[in-house]
Image (cartoon, rainbow, N blue to C red; front, side, top):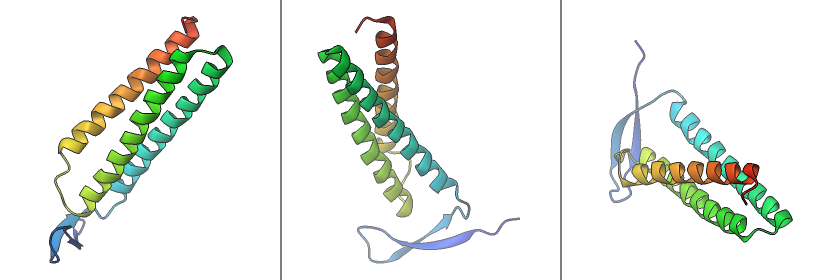
Length: 123
């Protein structure tokens, strides 16, 4: 049976360390890295939309790219705040995690819709 490692953390509002059973593996770090890669792909898709919008002179694609960039940036901030929640033993299911899922869903939907419209030649 694997031994559990006890880590000491300081809660932001308390100078006393709190004990938390930490995952001794790398799963939390892998999760944060996968979110970071996903956000990078969303930013790359934004750049592609800007290039296509520039070549077609389509203001709709520029607006779509701007909205996608804002959503991706908000998602980046939420992922970093979730990392802080994990470090300080705060609850991981909170308003930020719900917001993170909503922003991610909106970004994927916007990316898919814009891709389909460009491929169909609508935009």
